[in-house]
Length: 397
Image (cartoon, helix red, strand yellow):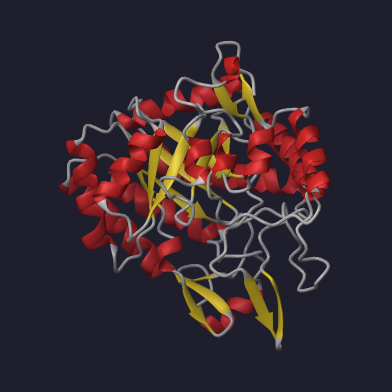
């Protein structure tokens, strides 16, 4: 690595490789992996520098207390997704939710989809078991196949090429579909670091950007201060989200903010709370208090999905009552702590899926199988998502 491409604090796009990297696949063929990385390094970016900068600018406004972030989309994208239909669906859903939220937001409604790169998934266990058979866990289409088959579950680096091609097409379609209105930017979890590194590019001013998406986030399972994912994300100029769960301490969050954004740039960091309705009361306020006392210019948002997941039989279960309950508590705690409640982060589908119980969705666990389509976690269906937006609009007004 040329010295001219290394920052003053020792960061460069591959510096993560000296750190422990959790939730990463083990590729059997190193030569094949390196060939894919080289191919992606020469490939077209998924998003443009200027659009990433515009999102940074919008987030700065939210950090100052004006505006609201609507972030949402699929739990995990699939290679089987019909791109045109997927884009049309998410644009229509954002429009319907925006009709509820826009009129009551004090400032701009910033829209960011989980799309054009959300192909990798962290897993709580490295293996899955069915009928006495054990295979490696499905980690998203960019890594291996969802079919419970030994061959499908082998990590294949060529899947990164397919994910990139689909992401380029999806991002272009999304930009075209919103060209005459408010833009919907792209986002995904920065989990598969060889893919992220290969798509990291330097702008004419010498700044490094992840061109895989406008916004990337750090997951709750990969937020180790000395870990590879934190190391990668600390060097890019993009907006960086940080999932903040009930095990996060104030000291740990402050240290993470110092590592990811030592300059304390307004809106650079989006803290995405995912506590669960039972844990948020005790966990959130001390974190908000510590960040405010430190003068941290962050955006606080609520992910009411991930902390409210239970298991019923073989199904993951999320209840709309718990999701709304966590949002209500998020708003109440933020206002009590004199913190701007800056947005929501949802797993949702434009389809009439039956994956979350309550509201205009299935009434019981027994009804989940009617139209269960997710590749991983339960999503709100379109009607539930629009109703939730109406609920949030009441809180905002």
